[in-house]
Amino acid sequence: MSAQEQPHLASAADRQPAPGPHGRSSFLRDLRVVWSERGFRRLFSTRLISQTGDGIFTAGLGTYVFFNAATFPSPAKGAAAFAVLYAPYSLIGPFAGVFIDRWSRRQILVYSALIRAVFVALTAALMASGNLGVPLYAAVLLTLGVNRFFLSSLSAALPHVVHEDKLVMANSVTPTAGGIMAIIGGVVGLGVNAATGDTEHGAAITLLVAGAAYVIASTVAATMGKDQLGPAREQVQKVRGRLLAEMGIVAVGLAAGARYIFRRRGPAAALGATGGNRFFYGILFLMSILLYRNYFYRSSATTAESHYTILVTVVGIGYGCAALVTPPVARRMAKPAIITLALVASAVVIGAFGESFSQIPYLVMGFVLGLAGQSVAICATTILQEQLADDYRGRAFAFYDMFFNITFVVGALITSQFMPLSGKSPALIAVIAIGYAVVAAGYWGLGRHSAGPTSGGSIPTDFAQRSSS
Image (cartoon, rainbow, N blue to C red):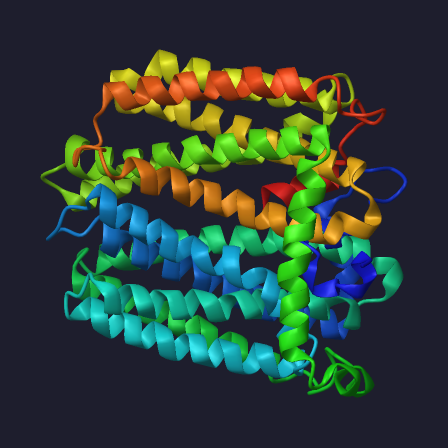
């Protein structure tokens, strides 16, 4: 079965059109070009407002779960929170397209935003009551699950509001701008939470601000025509009545994509390197939260939150630098070598600074891990794009997207069983450093002779920018 027969299996990375002949793109120039399209302006505004709400929602939820003045997070609760945050994107994402190809995408945007606002209000009410159990996680899961349909509909609708010759520019601009607005929303959410006293009620108010953003996004989406974003009514008639069959096709396609990757040494090695990096990064992420809240600033949740925000910002800067550094390096060095060096750098910086359990060294470690981790992701994604046949690329990337998030959650879940409440574990730091080194050695042994003739090719700058978003 060809990728064309399974459009809902294509990943975000795979859906991006090829870069222009120069391989470089000015964000502001591209934005000016596509902004002239009236439909794009409305769809783009819907995305920006909604993703601002996503950032506010994440900040409110994170401060409540991890930096609550009245409670201290445990490893098990932290791992459970990770699972709730990432499960919708990992498990629902590949199947969302089955519905998006049947329903009016404009209506999905309008009503999913409103439904999210309702679920956010429910979540806020649970927070205000001090709930930190199954009902809260269920409400969050529903909110994020609906958001998966919203984001997928935005991507599917884009070709309906820009001309084909501008689609490359639109695909380059929209995720980058959306990511920026999510970061800004996160900062706004932290500010609202701090202004309201870092209490359960303050977190609830922060979530209600996010809910208001979703209502505004729904209102903007409603200004577009009901059929403007597709799918065409003739297409809906063709697929009507085949829902279960198509969902089965998606599941079979995911399995086929996984088998296709693992039968090819180069892509399988790249997938393993990515999974190894995400596995250990998930452990470090959980450990860092526990350290800041339960060890560095046990007596002050507000101080812990503010200092952890600095760490997250530094890691984000590292991610952004990877988009600038990796493409020119890839023009001079094979991508398997870059992946190996990035993993080795992670092992070295963790071994050198990890057991200091001191904040300044951890900022250095966070920057390097952000840079190295995103470099691995950029190179691995490019290797898969280069070495997978087009007939399988969509299915393979759908599996890759799931694998990327699941390994992160699994790392946190496994180690939560024996991670100390304070997060301080010299033994675990040593295991992580050694683990990165083992993954680097394993990848170098498997990947360096199997990357194919394009392994030393360059990575387009605009692709790296999209990956970092």
